[in-house]
Amino acid sequence: MPHILVVDDEPDLIWAVRYSLQDEGYEVSTAANGAVGLRLARAHRPDLVILDVAMPEMDGMAFCRQIRRDPGLAAVPVLFLSMQSAVEDRISGLEEGGDDYLAKPFDLRELKARVRALLRRERVVPAPPAKLNPPHAALVVGALALDLDTRTVQIDQKSIALTPAEFDLLRFMMANPDKVFSSAHLLTHVWGYAPEVTDPSLVRWHIRNLRAKLAPAPDAPVYIRTVPRHGYMLVTLRTD
Image (cartoon, rainbow, N blue to C red; front, side, top):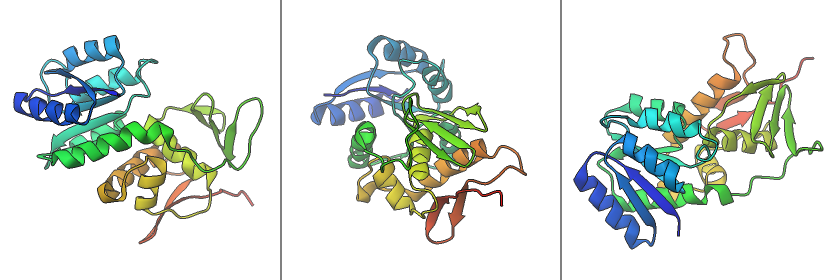
């Protein structure tokens, strides 16, 4: 069964989460701060990290930055835990490379549903690409080029660093340009969330971060557009 690392400085929460996940058959390791958690992550290479934002010695943001720089851990899904009122923590967590967040206090049933979705993420099969350019399988939309083999993205031959969740979102939208997708559709078809645990704000913030990376300047082309009351689409930019 998958190995899950839980990093949080609240002993009661650690106990409840570990018991709940072990009851599902998962192998669970725990740490009370980010520094210890990082050592465990590097030693055991977990399949998923559940990570508190505010911790002693090393907070969740610094932890996430470290594993995203480690080639052996860069693709590991990260589920952030944050206080209900700390919206800025959720946004910052996704910007640092987090895949999802869950506000404290939370229902353990929802935690388990999100864990299942994140562990299933790598098995989600995207829509067939529009074109394949040997020697690498690639998606090309306008000045955007996405290499499926190396999981790299370029705009006008300039590399862009994306989180795993952002890469999967862009891959799906580039494979289906000029089509509108609702938040619920993206959650279920890109990341494998079950319909009952979909959270539109998660898509909104991933879109926000991805859009900022694709169009860093005010006069840069806008690739991802919001269609009010319907969702989002990646547009094929034309120069004529």
